Image (cartoon, rainbow, N blue to C red; front, side, top):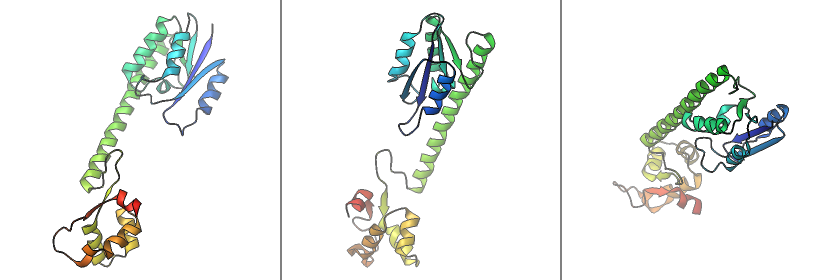
Length: 205
């Protein structure tokens, strides 16, 4: 009977050392780690390797079940895959042990909570994006925000200095100075050509 450990973090700047220490203390001689999102099983090669290694009587150990999956569907698939090999699943920081009825029940409950937490996070992100769009400051993935020169000049006309304008609009001071000293600052009544300036232009200045 072998004990296999699995550790996972979502981003490259996170550290798996704490998980590895817990898995080593639990008796795992082999520990596979990876830095992948837990919202999907796609691309998680280390987990796939471990599932292929499992044999009857073996135990797959994680610190918490959210290291395995963030959705109840994926979690159930993984649990079934472990059970199909005749192995068991255990968590070091939670009372989960698929060799017992109580451990299996607790696993199901935590899977529901993990999925609920993921859905809440997505909902909060969507709410944040909607709020940013309403304020006109959402640029979208991979895009830089834009700078409204009319807003810059309006704030300046109210006596707000360039540095304060830059801080309030979260743009570079160089852009504020350029917009205030450019030809469009002469005071045309309508929207001047170039009123909305890309932050890409700001960076190039």
